[in-house]
Amino acid sequence: MLIEELKSKLPKREQSINSFFASCSERKSYINAESSDIALHLEKAKHDLSRAIKEFEDGCFDWTVIKAYYSIHYAGNALLIKRQGVFSKSHVCLIIALKRLNLISDDFYGELREIHSKFSDFTAFEITYSLRRIGQYDVVKWKSIGREDADALISFAKKFIQFVESEVV
Image (cartoon, rainbow, N blue to C red; front, side, top):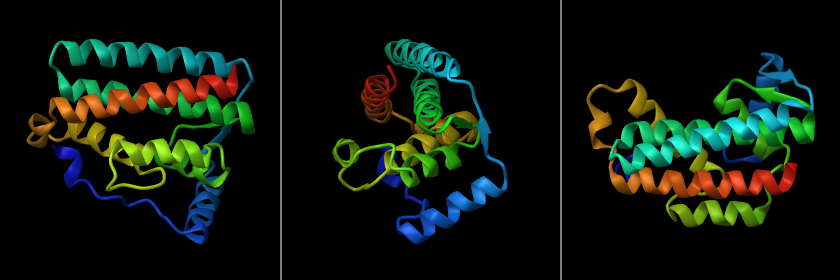
């Protein structure tokens, strides 16, 4: 399983998270959004998840993780728009904002840790990000993305979208 090879590079300590968040803010990674954009982001998240499931059923695991990843990204932005009135095109800055602004509960973090006990905090997002990059850009490693990797990301995406939907609707 490729997931086991991935290591987290996102900050864990609060001070580092705060510094990273400040850097994202300085680079203007957070863009003002209208509340009507929440529904659009959530709709896109659900669409991408449905396409990820279809790719999974077809045995196309690289595109499964790519589409599952984007479903998580759009759902995360729906939550960020709801709570802060902004979204982030930067995938890493979105993750940092969700963590820094406490938009995901400790209970939800517990669920994330269940995905793979080796990882903690918001690392499930980073695993998804890393697998998406491999599937999308690595012409050698994309073949090593397997059914278990794809299934884990679809499961995570489903949980995350359900969580976001309960928070924004």
